[in-house]
Length: 302
Image 1 (spheres, rainbow, N blue to C red):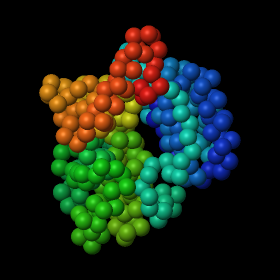
Image 2 (cartoon, helix red, strand yellow):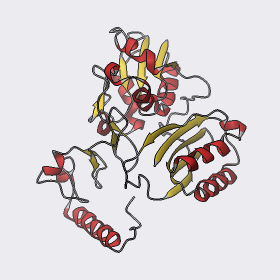
Image 3 (tube, helix red, strand yellow):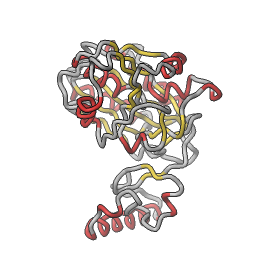
């Protein structure tokens, strides 16, 4: 079974009708996942049989607004549902930065092909910024890159204000999981006056798919926003699990901690939860286990 990730910044109208059409198409093909629609574009991740995903993408790109839109494909481990249901939602943004001046339809950074990324990493005068959040950067990245330490993408402007300056850093390089956050981030930096902004085309996932393992500079795993939690340097499902309470990825050693309780807490959030929260998470986990024992799925299991 295959996971397909795709996005495009493009002016969209008639969002309700588009939502209904895409939901019907994906549901009819037996696909699960999430598609976000906004006036600024589309952002999706779907899971299913390769033939079904190819049929969905072939139908989608018949719409001129999505023509030639690429889909990044990766495999899921056998038995992993990846997504539990299909959701097609209308949002204010397809990736939330909260800065209207950051408009990828007006200007974005210069795309750097995966095959050329290593050469850029070898230029010490160019700061390389990981645009992902702290729980993502904690499990993998390109050595030497700057980690903004953000909790959410909306915190990125505060990092820029503190750590970067267009006069001191006229040239900056960005990377993220699949490329979409770099579109917004590069548009924001250009709006602030940074002279040259590079962005890894297709993100980490494209780099891992394109660059031979002996030449890859990537270290660790790459967090993904589905039930796989993370993939390794060969795009295979990694060893991480995810804490339901704080959503952080958990390495095998985290699962051995006395502060880890499946479905309830982990070493990262144990001290931040109160008794009522722990009790609520424990009850939710019990309901999920009961549903699975009956061969069903609990409504809150995704």
